[in-house]
Length: 544
Ligand code: GLN
Image (cartoon, rainbow, N blue to C red):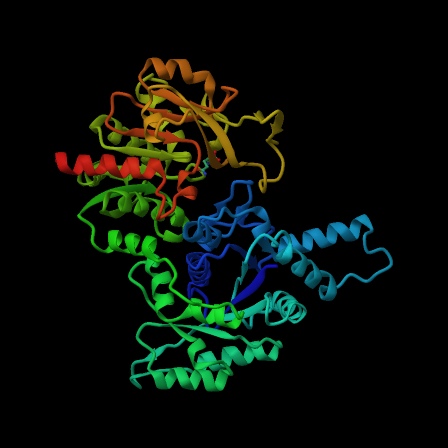
């Protein structure tokens, strides 16, 4: 029977609750336990798929096609456990389910209310399919005190009461700020935040205290005294130079030991942290460095490309090099002819996923630069689509080559496909329906051509499965002409309808993929495309 750890946050947002949850998951695994991580988000969107990455950061996609909060990416990267649709619930999705049930007549005769109907639903989804795990970590989005998170906290309170302390634990992440004028760390915000939780009937057992400097023993004791926890359960969470050091730091501060002690599980021996130590060593003591230009649109909000920047770092870990990222707004190539000079200094060019027409001409210019100057190039999703449009325009001379994403066009090299196969079934996409939920989402197979670079990159695999999130497809009608001009379609959907991968055989490393490999990269298991790309950048760096 699974034990549940409920993770809340207080004082301010952005304290890194996702990383904290993921790190605790990793520590429990290092002690030999199995874990499942779940996230509850208090906003009304049914999923983050329709939210701007400017507001909410990247939309993370699972194998089963759910568009989820980016914290699920941290969970997967830290624990290697694949997340599912059932692991991310928003207020919107919960209400949608409850209201659908009400319309069906499931509650006929009853008054449908937040308590008990929404709270029961929350308890149900948290506990669904958890028997096979030793621990289920449930992160509650937002900050304690928000109106939106009240039903979640109430459901947690009830559930903890039902499960008893042997099977439940509350961990609260707070901030202990340093006030320069007083020259002191202040514990009052933590006290207030815990008081807020107590007012909701929740007594946290472990406090994880974010701070930019060590928390003196005296302050720890003070927090313990006022917040009603053991002094050993006041765990300092100091800023780390790399997120992959967080599990090690938490272990040194005794987090895993305190959690296990609470559950009455013997904490004899030490967890196996060698994997994490190896990663931190590679990050902190690289043997060289490469610079990759990431040519995109949302370059001023790094959270929009969270998995991407992590996957590039993983590629660096694989080669023991530091990967510097030069975030380039593609629009500079449209207004300034000299701007491409910026690309002369880099060892690789990456055009990531994106939506909408703005900045596309600049992205196409960046592709052209990479192709002509033989700079390692990696195009992801939209980046692949731009690479194909570039080839159609500049190699085939089809000047009007474009994507129907930008409106009707004469030469739809990238277009909207409304029907394709998934397994034995036909999937349909509606050209006019709601925008939410009309994309090709989740893991799909692709067959890799023999003798291709990409097959080599995937260590000889003949077929792969990767995660998708896009509405448009490269138009297979242009395949033969593009191949004759040198762009090889080296990965196709098994039915041969959807181009999945393109590459130039006469280029050191030029690959475009229709899917998002960054979503499956792990620090301890870098994605082959990212380690391949960074490997090519390392070679390029040594040549110049
Ligand atoms: N906008 C493109 C499409 O919908 C690419 C999406 C992406 O890069 N994720 O097909």
